[in-house]
Image 1 (cartoon, rainbow, N blue to C red):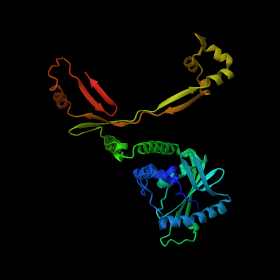
Image 2: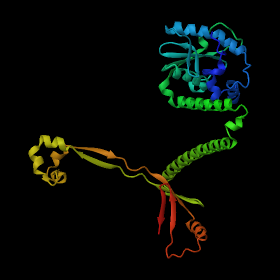
Image 3: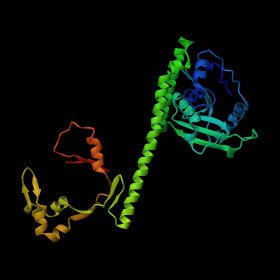
Image 4: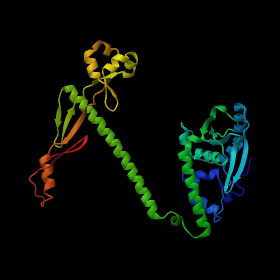
Length: 354
């Protein structure tokens, strides 16, 4: 078992990534910055959970090596200011082992582990990864139990957006660390000004409101479809409320389309083709004349298809047009015109009638 705490302040490691990205419940990003800048000491020496993980990790790795007939070994790679202490590495794959009591049903719910694994995969240039999640028993039993192990296979090409997110977070962390080393007296607020945080939070609020709006649009559209079906069922074309007229627009009629295989006909009936062809800028075959004079022959070269008519829908128009117009006109006393413009708003857009 490698000592991952040695020189930890000199490098950015895999276990730092969830903290840097702000998704760790273990430590805040600002605390990690202060530790890396040498302003505070990392006093964490481990606990019963990390101790249990250290005991089970080699047992899990040995089982995987035996089960998969592969050879994962602990790895240590240093690339500039990046250090990768991997639980297992071979020529193609990185193995990340986690023991936890929080068991989820999907890989995406293990994002805090996944970002660490992807970080290792990128910097060790491995395209494949394995996330081994072991369910820690309540009594901390140190005997390995295969039934508690779940292994997820990772392909780096499936996670480009998340890799981009990791890269941006690491770049921002490097920049903030440089600023903190240059000026140890700056605060967390100096690195992330309050007005920027407020704008970001407002964007988050608007995003939530947009999602609610999109859900309401879907709900409205579904109700319009239901109302159209109900009007169809009772044979009613229109329904009026105090605000809107709801008009049922019926389905359009299907159209039969004839397709004449001109190439095949020309190949099999060259003389007949020439008889009904004339030349302008190119040779044009007079299909209508040919069909009129050779009905039975033409049927051999015609196939038909059906073009579905436009689906019906529920049209909405404002009921009280005069009241709406008077309210609008009262705000424009300087307009002098012999024309009245009536505006109808429906599901297809805005139609102006003059």
